[in-house]
Amino acid sequence: QVHVVESGGGLVQPGGSLTLSCVAAGSVFSISTVGWYRQAPGKQREFVAADTIGGTQYYADSVKDRFTISRDNTKNTLFLQMNGLKPEDTAVYYCAVPLRTYDTGSFYYLGSWGQGTQVTVSS
Image (cartoon, rainbow, N blue to C red):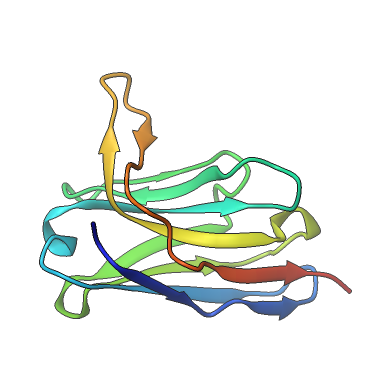
């Protein structure tokens, strides 16, 4: 179980930008595939982005070309740069450390979730 703390959320107007951060405790961060999920009100938690141990990034179609996932292994920190925000991006965002991969290539997370960080996109 990896303890994580997400931050960086807030209220932003449509078209605006935010950068989320997630600091992970322990020593597995740098050797793990990691990622971001989000949960909008009344909806299930959904995959947003992943950064693999091999250095490949994956994105949900809904955020592709707008969001960028990156990491700093020296600081056990995961980032999510969000540009061109839309009202439908409003959700609580959670990081997942480590992410695992099904044989099909999709990701799943077995750990406990942190408190998340709220992102609200509204004019």
